[in-house]
Image (cartoon, rainbow, N blue to C red):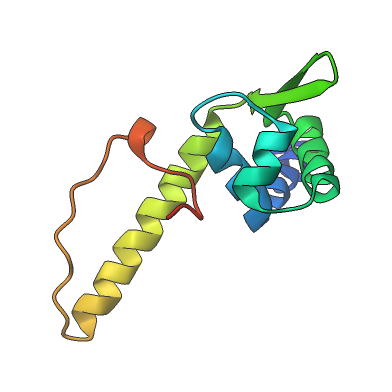
Length: 123
């Protein structure tokens, strides 16, 4: 990859590297929500939500539309969810190996299909 491409990839990871932005993506995983709904779901101030949504919008991760005085956001790039699925799966595998190494029984798990998995940071 050339330097410009590497910088673009690094920027994408920087945008995805914030827990609040991951919570916003998780909230948006089922579809469009208003800023007010995102404030309620994340228990964060509107100013903070708007700042993070602006970063995500510039990075191409979300899209927005206005309807009267309300602004709605929706996912714009499904690859963000795929990245989160890969990281979550990798972390789960690692934790299971560590638990097994400690002599604990690793919990039995059934892998969910990628579309059904929740983005990183979900509970």
